[in-house]
Image (cartoon, rainbow, N blue to C red):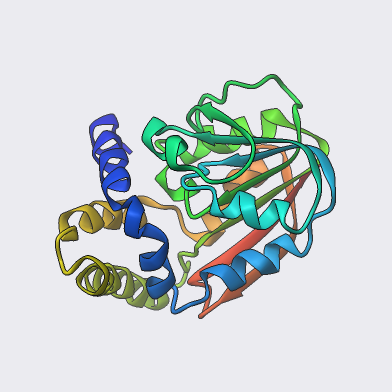
Length: 225
């Protein structure tokens, strides 16, 4: 993703944030919480936990409601979003591609519905692997993108229509431009198979995978060996 488009995306996310979770719920047909919980069920207590691309902190709250973490870090590239983050933890301004942490810092990293917004998914995956301890877990929850051409066509159709539908319902159409900006991140987002390859090449190993609606919602549980 080009820097100019990424800045436009960040501004769009900030304007959408009061409505973002409700719109995510509509777009996922009410399954965004369920797919997160499916992934979280595989997690255990840890010492250092990072929620990357934390936004308003919903994923971090769900995780810390199920497991105990000695120290929680909430990282996001947007200061505005960190200010409204309602989770308990240390707020860190940072991007996926250049995380302000030392090597092998975290036992657990989660990323929910934000990895697709990275400028470079390859660099982001390498950074996640770098700051994760050996034996550490990375949980990715996001919209999936089928590898099959026919399924991919319907995925694009779904992603194009539902943001407009959600925007009309939740914001009465005031923020359609912002949701069209998000549509470009879906277009540029690698397929589910490509995401697996990216994380494999970064040094992580896939341990568990779950999906809903033909792979349109997924979670992937990765371990650094």
